[in-house]
Length: 177
Image (cartoon, rainbow, N blue to C red; front, side, top):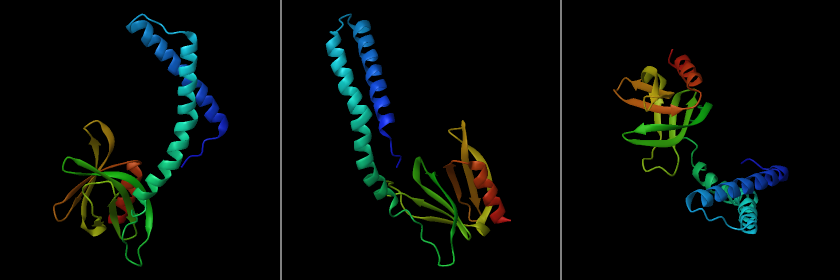
């Protein structure tokens, strides 16, 4: 979790309040032509700025840490005793029309996808390197270059959306050789 210093929070409070007042004034002027008093805008801007610059980050830090720890607490994959994780990253695995969120792990023995707790479709997927027949690049929504497709000897296709696609392809090709 990123900790915000007070200087950043104060600047954020001021800028958010000014932006809010500007938007509110513009909307009042353009939509109904009736502009409120300056004191009304100052009060609204101050209240909104304090809430968004100080209150909202405080609440998200307190609640966000509890929420994300619950999601990730059981996200460690089941590995054999002589197996260790070499790289890992958050990913989505397409299962039908659902993009199942989780983590992808490259171990010394296999590729492991472990969905996080919020998914409907659960269950760890293990893809042993000797079962992989093809690794190729793919586009998400036929536009974004962030996908990997893995085909296996048993006819399965796994379509992942992942950051640093080139690194993963390179590491996987090293493993299957």
